[in-house]
Amino acid sequence: MTFAAKKSAATPVLSVTQAMHEAIQRIFQSNDAQAVADVMTSELRAEGYRVYWRAQDQAAETPPNGSRPMLLGTDPLQHRFLEAWVPDDLDALQQDRLQLLQLVVDIRMRQQGELAYLFNSVSQLGQAERLQRALYAIADQASTDHDMNQTLRALHAILGTLMYAENFYIALYDNRRDAIRFAYYVDINDTETPPPNEFVPMQSICNSVTWHLIREGRPLYGN
Image (cartoon, rainbow, N blue to C red; front, side, top):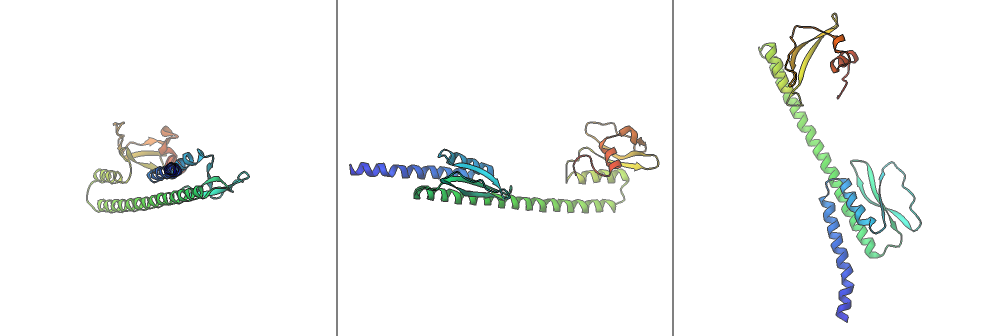
């Protein structure tokens, strides 16, 4: 009888430990803050806790009597908190379990924020390096004795190292004629290249992206 009682008493502790272990594994396998929140939501809502997001500049909601808000973690990328309403009368085991989950969630969300910051910094450095190389290449082209067509083709290729540029053209605007001509023109779908010395009236391309850029002084799409 004594052995059976000890075995029965130990079972809930082992069950909680296994559940905690699985929850912590899922939290550290999560790729973003929302995935972490989903793990916590499934873990705590089954026990009747309310789990929710709150913006950092948003006032906390008033929990029902007998409950209190508990901060589970901070999402530094979206500037929001993951919180839950927990009962005031938690026993020691429940309190320890929630505090451990709280610690793991906060660590994981901060890790994700730091990784995103590092990734963005590395991406910016890489983009700056590619831009610097492109500027040197453009300056090098300007100092060569290539003809204009060769120079513009080289410029097109350099631009292709920075962004998608399979379709690319250079339009020169003549204010007196109120018309443009295409000094360079490449389109993978439209293979009929406009003659470089032929002027196209602005009226004939009314409301196109080129017309909008010349008339308004800013792009219709993008930056």
